[in-house]
Image 1: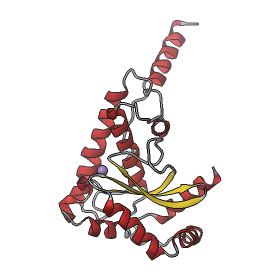
Image 2: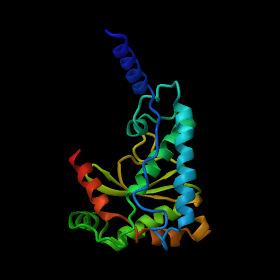
Image 3: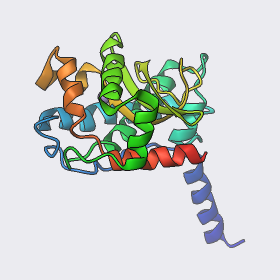
Image 4: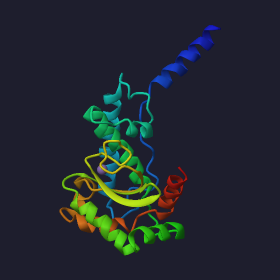
Length: 222
Ligand code: MN
């Protein structure tokens, strides 16, 4: 092998060995979810909080068995003996990446028929679904997430503490998330202060139901 191709191979191998996680661009502008989520909250949430999870995750996995896992694979590796820095920051990165994609500046997007039918079948009606989701989000004590998941082909609502998610084997209820809401105070405090319920109500105006339908389709094909 020539020296240049050896060098090239070494560079590729070292790149493969380094699984540095990075942030995807926000798919809309920071002020485009107003008035439901304000610009300042979006800026701090995306630029500071999400980025901190990524930086801390990259530090925590360096030189460990978790280094080569993709961010999706990492969720499934989380067990009771996983270091908390990997669990919290790995979950934090996955959860926020997911959260940005299920929001849209196209307010009150209609729910595609197939998903609407599935919601009616599993919860009785859209309003009952929203009420159950809100209850789960309100009753999660402290910081965490509320989720709509697919488990064995059925829709379920659940919540997780901290930055855990239903993909993790440590989750009380496991399944494939198709909708998620960040209920950490950093996600709403500037605008809503202690009114978590108002923030949850606002959230339902900015859900990208087309995206949720796509995730639903993928999850039932599995
Ligand atoms: Mn957050």
